[in-house]
Image (cartoon, rainbow, N blue to C red; front, side, top):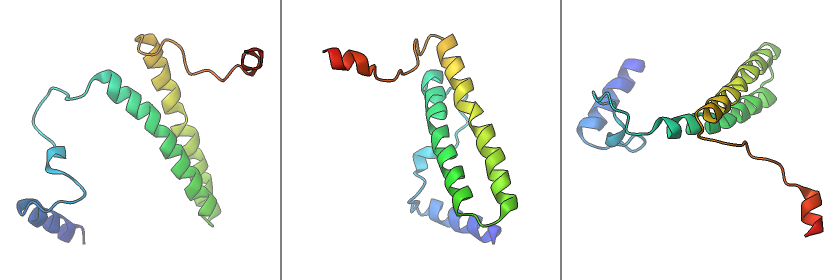
Length: 110
């Protein structure tokens, strides 16, 4: 089945009928990143929240206890990525201060 998928992908690529993956997204032989390190790190740090959400959702709809435990372990591991990313952002001066909560007392005074 996997071989058929590759063959189908090759046919669609030759006919330029790729819908889900644009041709501009193919891997190139370039060694220069088209995106800055700052942008890539920011996106990886931010998108890990989606991974946590999807893992938690999968755990909530899964009826197998063994898979639930595996999802729980995966979530705790995934939760370390944004913390490390945040540390790198701060150390490089790309994020001076993490987002803070709203100061409700200051809002009441104004």
